[in-house]
Amino acid sequence: MLETRAVVVQLLEKPFVLVQSSQGGGCGQCGGKGCGASKLSQMFCSKPRQFKVDNRINARVGDEVVVSVMEGAVLHSIGLVYLLPLVLLFAGAALAGSFAVQEVQRDGYAALGALSGLIVGFIFAKWIAARQIEQQNQPYIARQSCE
Image 1 (cartoon, one colour):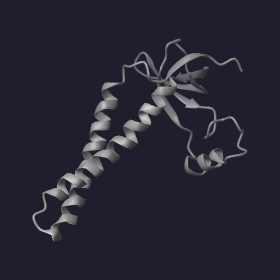
Image 2 (cartoon, rainbow, N blue to C red):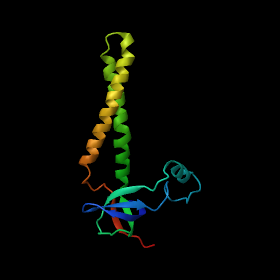
Image 3 (cartoon, rainbow, N blue to C red):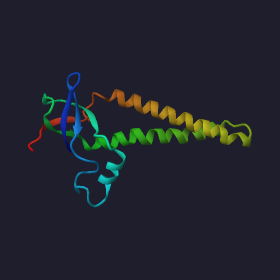
Image 4 (cartoon, rainbow, N blue to C red):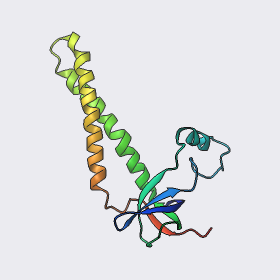
């Protein structure tokens, strides 16, 4: 189970709320020292990040809470967002390149096929993610923060 502290900033349609993470970037284990993930996050993500999460404990605006997500959900999301479009990019390039009649046309066909595969991959990933919104691998508020 992956957890982070956050503050409820807005109530949305039940049972969802908008939370703002109180931790900086990176894993939060080093306090900004060591691997530098925190510094990279500060460089590229200057605005506070807000997330829509399931409010299982009926938290109110201003409450400090602990947001949890299953570990496998993160890996699944990474695969969905990055790997699916990438696989369809290569498949589209290979398939479209095979339709070229002349050798000179092969690169143009492959480029169009790659672009088409990438676009279809992003659309398909978004469609799958929208259908999985009700599953248990979505982030949720586990409890109020003790600190």
